[in-house]
Image 1 (cartoon, helix red, strand yellow):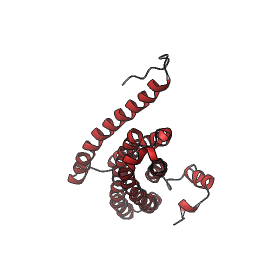
Image 2 (cartoon, helix red, strand yellow):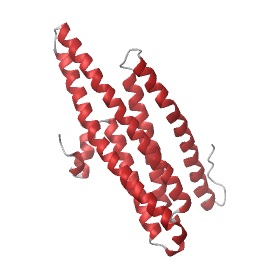
Image 3 (cartoon, rainbow, N blue to C red):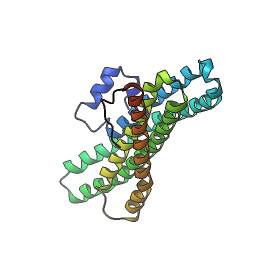
Image 4 (cartoon, rainbow, N blue to C red):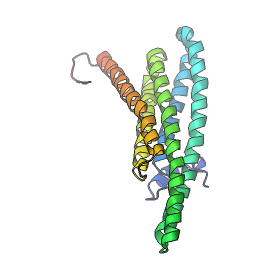
Length: 224
């Protein structure tokens, strides 16, 4: 498998625009969250360099360690998503190319089994992305104020990555017939939809806060 994260940035971006299924949306969601995690780590480092945030240093140092763990998990999911979906794509091609019904059915069942794995990975990505957004909110509120753009992007990337991961899961589920596994996946997703709504609202509140700090004439309206 190609070592995507060691590609030059433009080459990696071009890989996502080749018209292929690999690399795809799952790894792209992980990548967005990884960028957000690194920005949040930057906020932690900047905060701990400032004496006036001394009372926050212990908390922020703890959050930085957690962010480093999140980043490494996302990196693993990035590669795992590419690996699994490469197998799904290969099996789909084999299914579509054969004219023998028994072979077609065999490849179809095999790709659905792989697709189950490919649906678990975005769920893991979503959970790490949610935590990234939560940490971003803490850093926005308590960290270095001049770095709230970085905190804000960490929040937004966490929310965006989790949203993208849920899109992937829900699309994958359309390929399956009714089953206990499919029902359980929907049940598993339900609390994550609620968490997504909560985090979106929290993000909008902080966008409005920055707006109110700078827009003294009330020229910009944000409704939520």
